[in-house]
Image (cartoon, rainbow, N blue to C red; front, side, top):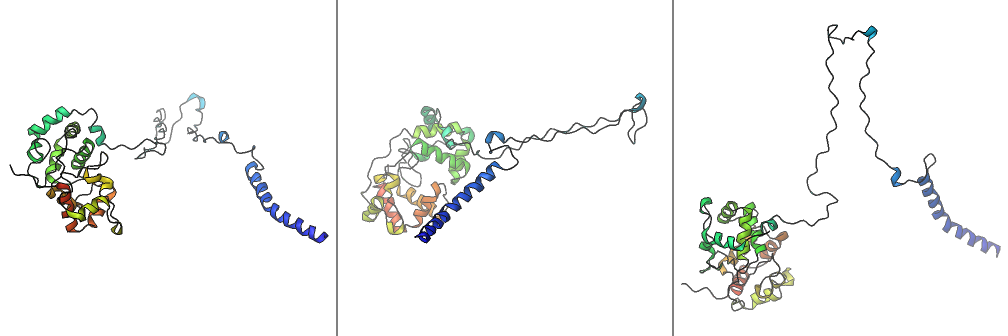
Amino acid sequence: MIEHRKGISIAVLLIVAPPLVTLIATAHQMIGTGGDGLIRARAVTASAPPATQAPATAPAASGAPSATPGTAPGTAPAPTAAAAPPKPPAPVPGRSALDFSASRPAWETFLRDADPAAGKQLAANGKPAAGVQACVACHGQAGITPSGGIFPNLAGLSSEYLAKQLADFRSGARVQPLMNTVARALSEQEIGQVAAYYGTLAGPPMHVGEFGGDAARKLDVQGDGARALPACANCHGLRGMGEGPLIPRLAGQSREYFTDQMNAFRSGSRQNDDVGVMRAFSQRLTDAEIQALAAYYAGPAPQQR
């Protein structure tokens, strides 16, 4: 019985001893043997930089000025330059670790107080002094290209999306020679005005789903999980009506423009999609599927006038 109790005592001691030793060691490190108590934040202060001491000079004897080596007696020594103050640290590029404000794109400022009426005038007349032709020459009087082709319909797109695209053309993030020239000739204020104007226009009539067949309809509504293709409607809205200010409306865009942009994403010549999603998705589509989607979103071909 005694041996049994002794064994229990030893087991309890083995369980309690390690944490107790750790606690004692930690307390010893915190308190120390030569310090002044526990470490406290207010007790830790930044050390002052060492003071610059002036060089000691020997006192002049009998009131006579002391001569430094290399100078004639009676000549005053050259004044020594004062120690230059320490240079402030160079600013570190980027945001500081304490800046928790949301990062905002530069094009948002283009839209601030943008006047759609001024944008309408610019769209109708262009900027001849800078060699910019009227927007209506390619994009139609009401932002709807009358004959289709590779020029997009601007009506029905949000002002935010249009401002971002013009800013990307201006910076070169999106490459199209004609639009790069136009956007670089416009000021930030003018880009905001044009984007604000076209953002007020209604999109073309809806004929989505009349062409393209079941393959296009399935890609729009369901996608293809086996190829990691989400439904187009997840981002662009059901039947391509658009979701959110930066996701473009596909409904009503011409077959030629849709196909041209999908091929640009596939080849990498267009790279201003968010984190490369369109470049990835377009490469998983076949040529026939791109053609089917183009017909699905475009509807019937425009009538020649």
